[in-house]
Structures are given as structure tokens and as C-alpha cells.
Length: 377
Ligand SMILES: [Zn+2]
Image (cartoon, rainbow, N blue to C red; front, side):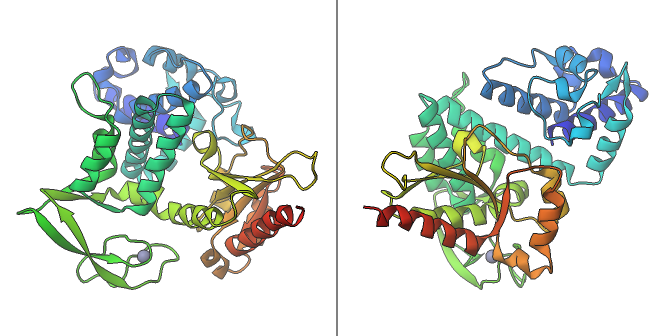
């Protein structure tokens, strides 16, 4: 994603230059750079921070890196092995690779992807500025991720309560929590304080417009219901990018985390989004033998219509040492004939050491493994 953003930005800069703007040579003044560039740079900066590095230094620095092979960059980019030798700029011109990537982006929902990026950045900022240490940052990160999954709609009362618990603000007294809400949600004012009735889906809790038959969420078939939101001046509804990239795919993550939380804590501990989202969850099972170590499984919950695209975008993150690495697919994807077999085939040659299980099989295996530890005593 970050590479595609950069390519889209470079293509945009070239267009501006052709139309007589400053372009790449005016790179020093941030005002003329497209939003995609700034978003990509912010994303790279956070990735580098995770590795304990301060990078990229400035826009010019990043332009220079665009002339070097992507595989040599200080952060690991999600790319096929064949693309690691690619550069984005050859001199001042876009490389063929960058042209093609920029072309792909033009056909995608660029605006939603940009907002996704901004939500991610705002969430990270809120977690980092409010968390005193790594553990606190991780906790707030998980809390905000869970908020996006559980609350497609928030009342302003709920937002105020959250802001009270996460008070860190910038030098203009603008709280990072409020910035996060403003990025991920859209405000709807109400005429007077009180309860506002909204139609929503019972299953995924997404709001349903008047006249719409259902929620349109993949795999969700539940009925609409009326829902009351207690507001002072208004309520917040998720931006479509928050729904597309965090809420709807997160439903499976939330469901798995809830089910795993029901397993006995003595037998297995579940860590949601370990290392700020290296995986969706790490499961630490109690050792089977007295002197054996605990056993760790990491999982990634993936609700994707295309096994090919899922496999193309999938990367193994080695920051969490694990005995099993599992992609968990929701049951509704199995309705597509051969889905799991296609996914396994697409993954072959791209990644090794990752298994694919459907939601039910995974939960059954996790329960059996947890209980084995229990029988031992
Ligand atoms: Zn629904």
C-alpha cells in the first residue's frame, strides 16, 4: 500500500510539473506535495519508528530513496520478491514499475485508501501519546481497534467519555483522541439533546439507510433493528473507509477474540494484535510437559473475496516467534467452491510455514489444544 501511495504521489507530482507547477524540484516545500506523498511518508516513518529508527529524514531524503531499489529501504515493504530490485524513480522520471503501480491505484478507491492511512496514523498517534510505556501503548492500540470493530456508530457522550480517558493533546490543545474520532467518523448533528433512533443491522451493527434492504456487509445476513443513541449535540458514524478497512474485516477478528477469551485463562492466554498488529492474535498455550516451554500460535483473520489478492498481500511477520502460523478464513467464504484450496495454492511459493483453516476448525483446534494442557494436571 505504501509503495502504491508513493507511486500515485509521484505520478501526481509529474502531472503538476507538466501543468507548470513546481513538481519534484519544489520538494522542499511541503505545501505543494500531494496528500498521498505525505501519507506515505508518515506511514514509512511509523514503520521505521517500530524498528527504532528515525527515517525518512525529510521529503528530499525520501525522493532520493525512490531512486534506490525497494529491497534496500530501511523498512520491509510488502512486495513480491521480484519487485525488491525495482526503483520508483530513474533520475527524475517514473520507472516502469512506478507507472504500473500508479496505474493500478488510479482504478482503486484511492480516497478511501488515503483515509484508511490517515485513520491508522491518527490511531497510532493517539495510542503513543496517551500510553506511558510500550505495554500501555499496546493496550490503547487494542482498545481503539476494538472500538472500530464494535462501534460503527458512537454518540457524542461516548466520545467525550473516551476523550476523558485519553487526554493527551497537541500544543493547540487538540486532543489526539478527538483527532482520531474526527478521522475515522463523520459527525451528524441532532436538533436537541436526547435519544435519536437509528436503524442498524443486528449482526454487524452497521447503520442501514431508510429503504435499504440489508447492511451489505460480506457474510452478514441478519435483520435490521431500531437502536437508540443518547446524544447531547450529535452522533458519529464511521467514515466508509473505517468501515471498509477496519470494521467489516474486523468482525471476524472480534468474533475470534471473543471466542478465544472464553477459553480458560490458565490454559491459554490470548494477546490481541501483538506488536501493534504484527498478527491479529497470539495464543499462548500452557506447556504440556512440566519442563517444556509454552506453545504459541499466531493467527491472521482474513475476510477476502479473492484468494489471489489475499495471498498477494500476505506477509509473514517474524516478530512474534510461533510454533504455528494460521490464516483463519470466515465460514461464509467457503461458499465459494474451492476457496481454501485456491488460497493454499496461491500462497505456495510466496510464503512458507503458514496454514489455512476455516473459522470453525481453528476454534475447535484451539479448544482441543487448551484442554490438553488442562488434562495434564
Ligand atoms: Zn449486518
